[in-house]
Every structure is written in structure tokens, then in C-alpha cells.
Image 1 (cartoon, protein in one colour):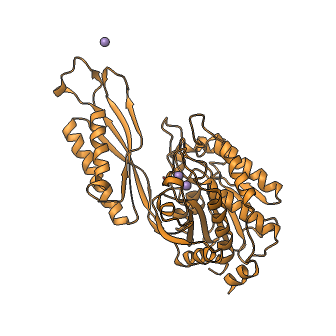
Image 2 (image 1 turned 45 degrees about the horizontal axis):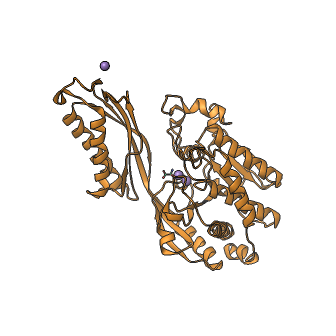
Image 3 (image 1 turned 60 degrees about the vertical axis):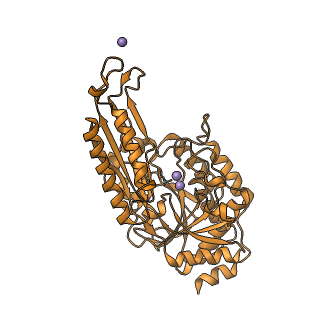
Amino acid sequence: DALRGAAGRRPALRVDGARLLGCLAELGKIGADPAGGVTRLGLGPQERAARAFLAELCTSAGLAAETDAAGNLLVRRPGAASGAAPVLLVGSHLDTVVQGGRLDGAYGVAAAVEVLRVLHEHTVELPVEMVAVAFANEEGALVQAPFWGSRALCGALEDGLAAEDRAGRTAASYLAEAGGSPERLPEAVWPPGSVAAYLELHIEQGPRLESEGVPVGVVEGIVGRTILDIDITGQAQHAGTTPMPARRDALVAAAGITLAVRELAAGRALCTTATTGFLQVSPNVTNTVPGHVRMTAEVRDTDAGRLAVGEAALRRECARVAADSGCSVEVRVSSRSRPVATAPALRQVIREAAGALGLAQLSLPSGAGHDAQIMARIAPVGMIFVPSAGGISHAPAEDTAPADLVHGADVLLHSVLGAQAV
Ligand code: HGY
Ligand code: MN
Ligand code: MN
Ligand code: MN
């Protein structure tokens, strides 16, 4: 079939490893945080700078790069018929969390661009054209709308333009500065049938591949996640004069919720993970009883039913803490993403690609969210993982051995060739 035909014609094709690593090194300088790691927030100026850097690199390499109305970067080979036939979309994101690593997202984008360059240089004709993509604002670290770019492309952004940062500034105002266009946002939606398949290469961000000494992960599925914004209002009062029983301490309430969140997953095993990662205390003063707290709680699971159970239990804990503390506790859904399975045919393509390269592989679920789970709404998706040193990600210590990074990109290249028949 075309799968084996394409790969069979080019079994010796490899990415330029030094070029890929050089590109990642350059990207890692954009948004390098003096406090450590990379801070390149979605829809912010650093993400835009990273996109501009890559667009320039692609143009110099003879590829055609454009930014859509949502702030996504799309890269095609010149002369590739645009819009006519379904394409094989390959990419990830360029934004990071605050003080994140240089590989989460950027690796998958840089590798997609590298693969496109190799195909172009070797004039490899593909029955299904490959398009590289850098999705905007996957993390939702600044504007609270994760998977922004992939949602926009799938027509699933809903009321995303109204999403806000922690200070109340809207996504719409960020988007204009980020090089996108709030008015033309509907133009970023791709028509039904335009994506034949979506492939994403990513660091694992967890410990399994490293601990098992395996260079390639074939992702079986991706967790769903529900993020809740929780607003706790008590009474700011003097810390020295307010008797203990008379207090309505919003931080003590937040502490109760934080421990209950952990218990949802750790003790009660209702869902796989449950985390409080954000906490804002007001007035945050040594000798004032805290009057107000804003916090988040997120729950994750690969099973939609367990995800719902985790959320319901979390809401009950918030109500319990409210009753016990005398504080008011308001809960609002900040974002939801569904758990998805990757396409069995693409898992097989990835396994064969790794096998042909002589690389061992194992199947595993993803505990991190990815644009692939949004793309699964409109196309079959496949994901490749490479090991993360110490299993660490979303932190400055995030790292992957250069050889593993190059191997992963080679697996991506041969998966692109192999996916032609899927
Ligand atoms: O948080 C996540 O799972 C992803 O990295 N956005
Ligand atoms: Mn991430
Ligand atoms: Mn990521
Ligand atoms: Mn005083």
C-alpha cells in the first residue's frame, strides 16, 4: 500500500539532528526567564517572537509560513495545493507555563518543521500533503483558555474571546497584539474533512520511558481535565484582636480545600490526579486574617466517568468547607477537556516507524493534555513520546537527551511517510 510504498522508497531518510537541536537551542532563548526556565506565555509577546523566529527560518528554507486569525503558525511546502485535499497536520505548541521547560511543545513544532524541510529537500512526493502547525496558547497560562489554537482550528473555541487573564484582560485584546485577529477568528476554522490525520511528537513529561530505558512511547490515550476556579470570601480582620472562634479566614478555608483536592486522587482514588496549583491571598498581610482567596483545582482522568465523579466530589468538599468555615465558596468551571484515545491505525504506523529505525517502544497513556486531544474531534490522532530526564516537566529542570530528541524526530518523519495510507 501507499504506506509501505512511501516509506519503502525512502528507508534511509533521516532528519538533520544538528539542525533540529540548533533550532531548539535558539527557541529556548526566546522567553528565557532570569529566574530559571522559559516563560513564553500563550498570546503574549514571547510566543509571538518564537513564532516569528520559526516563520523566518521556514521562509529562508523555502517553505511558506503564515499566521492564521487565531495566532497559529501554519507551514507548507511551496506550491502545495492549499485547501483542496485533506492534509496530514503535524505539530504542537510554542507557548510555555510560567518558568516551564524549553521542550514542552517547542520540540514537537521544531521537529515538524525539520521533517517538512527534509521532505522538501529530498523532493519527496506525498499523496497526502503535510502541513506543520504551531498552535497558539496550548497552556492557557496567561489567558485562561487552554488549547486555544487547536480549539480555534476545530471550531471549538466557543466563548474563548471572552476568556480573561487574572487581571481581567480579555483574550480578544491579547489576540490583536499577538498577531491574530478577533474579528476574523471564524476564518481560522478548518472545514470538515480537511484534516486527514494529526500527529504530535512531545516529550513524555513523566518518568516511564526513562525508568524503563525505552526511547519511544506510543501514546494510547490522553487524559481529560476539568479546571475549577474557586473564589473564597471570608472577612479580613485584625490578626491580634479578632478572637479565634469569630474568624472567617479565607486562607484556612483554602487550605481545607487544598487538602481535600489532594485526597480525591491520593486517598480516595476517585480520579487519577487532583491538584491545586494557583493560590492568591488577599490582602496577603502578616497581621491581617485573610479575607479573600482565589484558587484553582484541577482533576484528570482518562475515563470521562471518573473525571465527572472527581469533579462532583470536589464540589461537595467546597460546600463542606464553606459550611465549616463560614466563608462563601464560589466554584466556576474554567475549562474542560475530554479524555480521548489515539487512533489504532496511527499507533501501528508509529510502532512500524520506530521498528524500522531499530528503536524500542512501549505504549502508554498521557497524563498531560495535548492539542491532539482537541484535534481528535475532527481527525484521527497519533502521538509519539520521547523520555523526560527525571520525569520532570513544567519546570526549568525539564530535559531530554539530544540523541532521544533526534530519534523521536526520525520516528515522526517515518510516521509521516507511514501515515500516507491511513
Ligand atoms: O497541563 C497540561 O497537561 C498541558 O501541558 N497543557
Ligand atoms: Mn505543558
Ligand atoms: Mn505540551
Ligand atoms: Mn494596627
